[in-house]
Image (cartoon, rainbow, N blue to C red; front, side, top):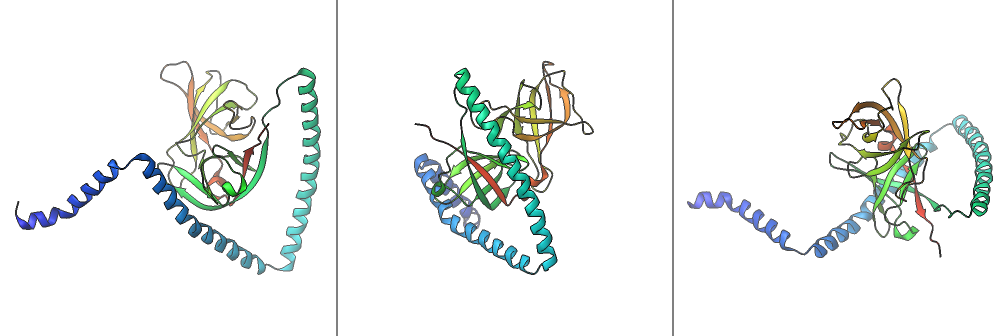
Length: 276
């Protein structure tokens, strides 16, 4: 091989040797290096998140007293509404406990709500993720469901010392059991290959053939509670298109997800309660 051609191909040879060496490294070492690299990056992401919070704080300081009074009034109304909802929830909880004891049914799994601030977003064609500012230091465990006011956000897929990674329901890596609202027949929901800056969509399979939905008459789908991860009744999205599957036994369709998924700043992690 001429010296000039050998010199030009030298970077590719070095890259090939590095890739070959990386493939020979044991999986345990690769995973340890990946976790260590993430832990080294975590302080940077957390610091940037705190800086953004500080910027928001000082921008709010520029608001007039009239705006603050109006915001306080709206907040008081919301608090009053939430207090009534909490009382109703507690009443229903006691009724459920009474019926479980009367019928000798097993108690439903409980969750502890852990609010968490979003520190980083990672959206691409392969996955859509959030990094929150709480991890093992707050008792968050792998597989914990994550929700917000509009329904399901996703599921915790990685837990680190001070952070946790959440796969969004719009990510193609996440699949969960669902039902049509008001129906008990199970469906299968999965995230789709969504563009980084486009509307979030999902895919639903095994829809009964008697179901119908369209852009002008959507059907809401909720979690079914099957699988033991997500509680039943949490909103996932709306089916906006249905068509018969290739085998003709079911229908498959497109699910429109909440647009706020890409703009969330605060989420709630449902940490399963331990039972002795």
